[in-house]
Image 1 (cartoon, one colour):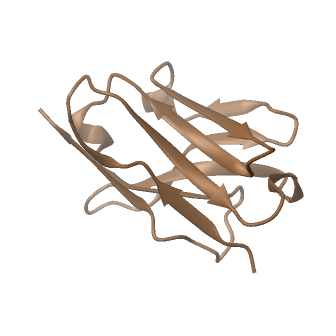
Image 2 (image 1 turned 45 degrees about the vertical axis):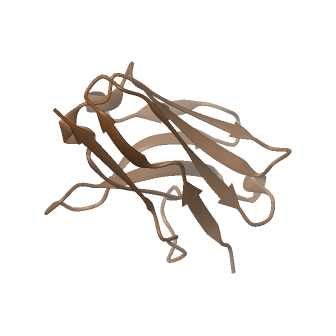
Amino acid sequence: QVQLVESGGGMVQAGGSLRLSCAVSGSIFRFNALGWYRQAPGKQRELIAAITQGGSTNYLESVKGRFTISRDSAKNTVYLQMISLKPEDTGVYYCNAVPYTAAWGQGTQVTVSS
């Protein structure tokens, strides 16, 4: 059973930055793609960034140019660098495969104040 452990969230003011980390049990290359998902208050969880085995990346339009997904295969870790944060980025951030599996972690809370 794969385990995914997210970390790095916190409270920041609008315009601030955070870097999220996702530690994956086992090799990240067993997944065709890994992604970061966000669940904003009162909304459904949505995929916001993804990275394929080949290193291609895709982003939700609202985070393009502000968020960057990357990986460190030696550490089996996926990152999400977030800059120019906005209050609407507030939510719980999760990592999972793309398409997602049942193995959700606990997520990490990001709160952006105006």
